[in-house]
Image 1 (cartoon, rainbow, N blue to C red):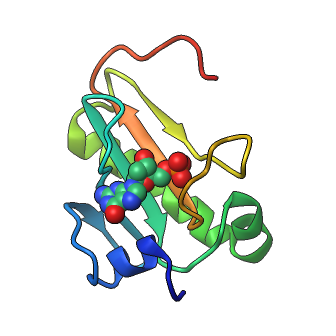
Image 2: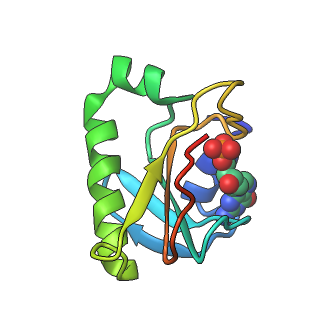
Length: 114
Ligand code: DGP
């Protein structure tokens, strides 16, 4: 989609540090990490958010979740623990309108989620 930062990252038009890639998903380090490990997992097909993705392509959503666990194993945080977060809309402070999941860990995370 035109003017979508994450579509441009997937297309290689904006540089990123790749962690993992397969047919349906792409994973790369977040520019502003909020923990020792912070990776973003995106679907290669553009959806604005999780609601639109679930309506259009549950395959994309399940592929992303699967990739989150692959990434967690790759980062070595699958046993120590990690969090998967997707922000949807204004109240959740979503800032990039291309479905993405934050994989956050590598340290003890806050008990509060909001
Ligand atoms: P959210 O607030 O949930 O929409 O998260 C968007 C995340 O995307 C935020 O943590 C920062 C990250 N981000 C924004 N632009 C870029 C970029 O150009 N490269 C990378 N690697 N991350 C980006």
